[in-house]
Length: 392
Image (cartoon, rainbow, N blue to C red; front, side, top):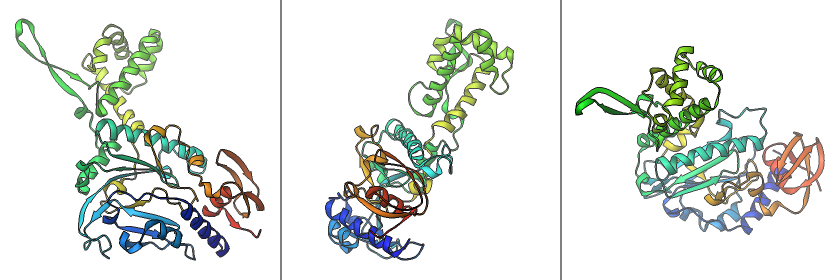
């Protein structure tokens, strides 16, 4: 990045901060703060181990320093400005989740556009929120667009603040589906025999409500419903596609789906050994497709620094946006995170990496060279290393 480009971005970041009121996180004075200044060279220098007392009033600090990135800690400390982690005196930490589009298995790097990557990341966010809402019952959640490649979720329920790294690892494993064994999803029920005598037989059930078991049950039920709507030969072909399910077993399952569908609705997978085999395979697919692919070290780290909502991301020029849950479906990061400060006028930039860009509801097909572009687009390109500031 040329010095002229860096100076321009730093100046315009300062203009943004002078015009924008930011809300600090709860217990802001108990948290460590850090930031990255606009320094020369290819690397970045993190300034950290600062308390809010060290920085001064947050709005004034941001307008004065005009940082490239701004962070605060998930942790709360006795002395957040201490120069070592051991000297800070840890009290508690938010439970923080980070979803990064670059790390999603569904994203094809080099092929998916930035807009496509962010759309896939939002899908992963929805899955994560299902776990946090439905499986864990967390109530104090803040959802944030990171300003770059994904989303953050901050959980501040009292029940999670004191968790150590090992306990947080268990949460990670759950939402990722790591180490999930099929037998642990299944409940067993003893079957009563004749004349009140107890039979040694048991029925095995996937729970119809709650947790991974319910997710697998839902998919198994969808399979059974689809098979019932197919003609017999098509249904047998569908079921025979599963490992170790030949035509005879597939035909038996087809009959069960037709004659004992109510048992399937209850989650009973004991009607036939083949049915349980298929259920186990459905479980593996469910975990692969419905897990939340979070950045694991972020969640397990009780001292993690995370981006400040309302600040600017120095790698995109977009805002780090706190999103109300009611607005999440409609939220478009490439429109709603474009700072108003950069909208309404054009600037001259020298495009060094041409190509297609979608931003602020418009599609651009950029040529190489000096050209006049909307400032929000020019800032985005310069921050991402695709353009340099040109003389006006």
